[in-house]
Every structure is written in C-alpha cells, then in structure tokens.
Length: 592
Image 1 (cartoon, rainbow, N blue to C red):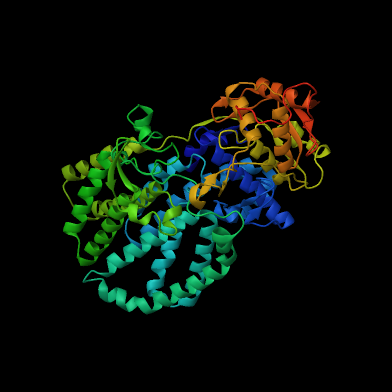
Image 2 (spheres, helix red, strand yellow):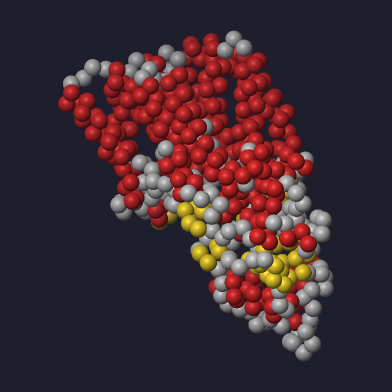
C-alpha cells in the first residue's frame, strides 16, 4: 500500500516531484542533505548559516526531522537526498499502518483481521495521503501507536523506571520529527485517559494504576526534558525564533463540509466525486471521510455502546469524547461551510493565543479524528466477527463497510517532472567560483514556488564535501506581524525582481538606479557567484529563462558558459557597476 501511494516518485526519484507541494518536497530533501553535514562535519542540528545567508535559519523552529536526517545520512551519502526522501515517505506510511495494527491487536481487539482493518485505515486515511504530498513529518503517523503503546504499558508495568526512560527517549525523538504531532498525541492521550478513568467500572483500575503510571511519566518528563533542553531553548528563544506560526490559522482549518465529501486522491476523486476546494490546499485536507463512513461510525458506536459491558462503554465514551472534541478543534476559530466563513466563534478561538496552540494549524487535528475512526472500525469489525448473526445481517454490514471504505481507497500521490541537477553542481565545477565559506545561488532564488536553488544546495551537502551558503530559501523564520513567523526571508528588491522576471517573463528596463539597488542587496548577501541553469522550472511549470538571462546581461553583461549553466562572478559591494549615461545613479524613482 505504501509503495502504491508513492509509486509516482519511485518511478524516477531523481526527476519526479510531488505536483502540489514542491516547496516542502525540496525543503525536506534539503534537511536530509544537511543531515550529512551533521554527521560528517558536526554541524549544529538546530541552527544553520548555510541557508538564508547571512542571517541563517533556526532549524529547531522548523520541521527539522533531525532524527531522520541523521539516521538516513549514510543512505543520503550513498544514493542522494532524493532516494532518502522517498524511502522515508514510504516507510512512514507502512510503519503507521503496522503500528496501529500492533496496538489494536495488543490492546483492543481479538481478531487479527479486525486489527488489519483498523491499522490500514489509520495508516492510509485520506488525511495521511494528503500529507504524503511533500511532508515527511506529518506522514510519521507511527509515532502515535508507538507512544500510546508505552503509555498503556505503564498501567501494569513492573519496570516503570525502564519504561519511563524508553517513553522519554521516544518523546524526544518524536519532537525532532514532528513536534506539532507530538503535542496532538499528548493532548489526545490525556483527554482519553481522563474520560476513560471517570467510568464506574474503570475508576478503580485507574486509581490502582495511578502511582506507578505517574512515577513512570515523571521519569519520562525528566528524560525528555534533559534531551530536549537545548532544542527547546532554540525553538522558543534561540536566534531566528519567533512567536506563533508563519501561517494563517483561519485559513488552515477544516471546512465542516469537508468531513462529508470525498478526497481528491481517492477512487471517488478519480471519477470526479470530490470537493478539493474545501481544503486550504491539496496537502492539508485532513478529513474528507465521506458521509457514508461517518454514518457507519455513528451506527457502529451506538451498537458498541448498546451491546457493550461497562468497560466497553467507558472505552467508547472516551473515544467519542476525543473524536468530537478534535473534530470541533479542527474547524478552527470560525465556522466554515462550503468555503464560506461565518462569524461563529468556535472552541479554538479562545485557545488560539495560548502557547503551543498559537503555533499549531487546526486542520491537522482532524488526523486524530481519523485515528478514532480507525479504532472504532477495528472494534466494530471485531464484534461482527465474534458475535453470531444471520447471514443476511452479516452481508448487510459487509455492504455498509464497502460503501463507506471503497470510495476513499487511496490513489497514488500525483507527481510531475522537475529540472535535472546541473552538471555544474553535480561534478563540482561550482567550486572554482566560490571561495571557502562563500555564497552562491541559482536564479531565481529559492522559494516555495521556485525551489530548485535549494535543491542544488541540498545535493552538494549530501556529497559531504565543500559547501556554499545560499541566500533566501523556503523555511519558517521571523519577520511576520507582531513578532510572529513568516515563510522565507523578508523580501528585498532584487530577489523580488528576479522572481517576477522568471515567473512572468517581464524583463525590467534596467538603469543605474536598479544597479545600485542590486549592488547593495548583493553586498548584504555577500554573493560570490550567480548562475542560471539551461532549464528552469517552478511549481507551475517551466520558467521564463530567456527573460531572466536578459535581465542579468543588462546588469552584469554576458555570463560565462560553464557546461549546462551561465555563471556570473560577483564582487560584493562592487558589482554590478554603473554604466555611464544610463539613467540616475542615486535619486529615488517614483516606481521604487
């Protein structure tokens, strides 16, 4: 199943990229390349000066997947960041499904087939398939069953010290892979345990287990706190840190109607029965379960509650509370219905300014709902396989499962061609143009819409040799309103000019005023060389290379042909030099 979902990337990992989220794909490849720098050169895992020169990037405040970057560094050095990326993505999906199967079979159901149903849904629910469009952090769904297994193990543990240490290490690893997901897991687990413990049949069990469990959790907190002390400092107070998030929390929410319709990457979506416009983008559609599945879950929950004993009722009550609460939280601060926002404050509104909640994206809380649904499917399947019933009723339940689940069977993530790595980068020719510790970039600069420049740097890092720094990039950093974050570096006139030329084909009428502005920006970035590959591409397809070359020739003169790129050497603070008689040298123009 995991290979099926990622098959478009496996077709040619070096030349294919996800169609809807090239920026995140490139960013995670960059992080995997940086893992080689950590392993071979002792680079700081939580801050780098190689991206966004000269300010650098706080990696602790980004989704740095440090554990993956270091663990897979040998594969990255051997085969490239492209292979490591698709390998981790595939393993994430497979491990998520198996992890839930293992948890459900060990703690919730008797029949393996019931655990298979729940595990497959929890591993390949529509939300996880959506996040497979570029996210190595949010496809690491195996973190939830792994952590929950150890939490449940504490209740009857005779080795609470050992188990507490293991859980603490696991939480520290989880923080380096997906800190926001770790927060959701902890919040959901706490709500579940409280709701489960309040039942008449379960309160004595909870009270008896409390001393051992709390002692083990205390050990876990101490271990995780010790391991994460420096990363947490960097995240909240280190250089390049910021408050909140770089994204709009009122945009990245679940439309309530999204719970009732089918996802784009599904069999239903293949035949056109879907509403992709209800998600903020193709990567963040975390619900999209379809009305038949929700009806099945409501009916199944009622049956399990009605026919269950007191302990089963306590379990269903806790699951229902978690599912409903996270459903409401996923809707965000205001209610949305079929893309229209209504001025109806919801539960997330008073939480949005609290620490941690202010850095979360509400839509992703629907992934917890997916896991609640998967668990309920496993429990319902287990009951249907255990309790004798007439053939007609068994067939009816089978049809209900098919109607609910077949339409959301996942399709492979869509992919598209991307520009090949220039030979100028691959064979090391770039080293002749950049001194040790120097700065170089492809044009246009790296951004979410034009990620190639960040990719080229990632591939040189993966080889473990000399390295250049690059300006700008796709990351989260400071510079947003009221001290919040923003995507990428604050814009300067020159990088905006190059981006507009490349994406629109409009060539600027360059004069000495422009040259002076470019000269100042290049001095700020300390650029030593710039290059334009023979093929430029961005998230919307091929870019306007000819217009970009024309602009560079107006600024610097003809570039030097080196293999498959044009290169311009830059003397920081000197180039581009003014041209006598070519427009104003200093006065501000009205168009600036």
